[in-house]
Image (cartoon, rainbow, N blue to C red; front, side, top):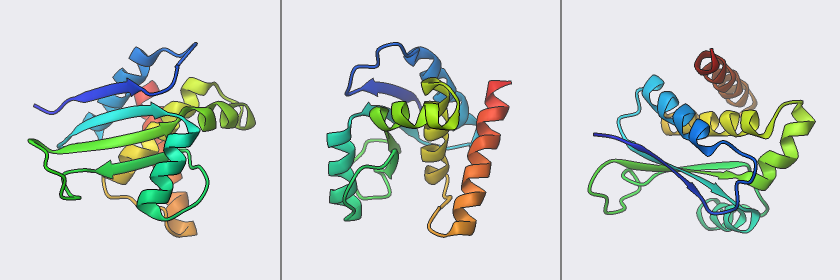
Length: 142
């Protein structure tokens, strides 16, 4: 049985993490991801380290997704991880005119879409992925 776990590497003051976990579980099911998924709220230092180590990029990003099973890590089951940078979400939310919780749902959806095979490495692909993320969030918030 696949499961979704939710972890905080940084304080999540003022957030309903149970609501985020429930959203994540529904999104995994909706996308028919046949894997367990760890959703990790992390900080700037960790997201920068992951971005540098695995993507050879400097600076921070808002979300990074890993399919650990496909990457050859020894996992007893299919396992994926989505790292979401909480400080980046807190900074972006007012800029986009919504709550931090809403921004986190958008970022979680984005990471899960990566795990479903979507890419955002071109302008057209990025627009398609952002639209798919918005549609997924809207569907699950009904």
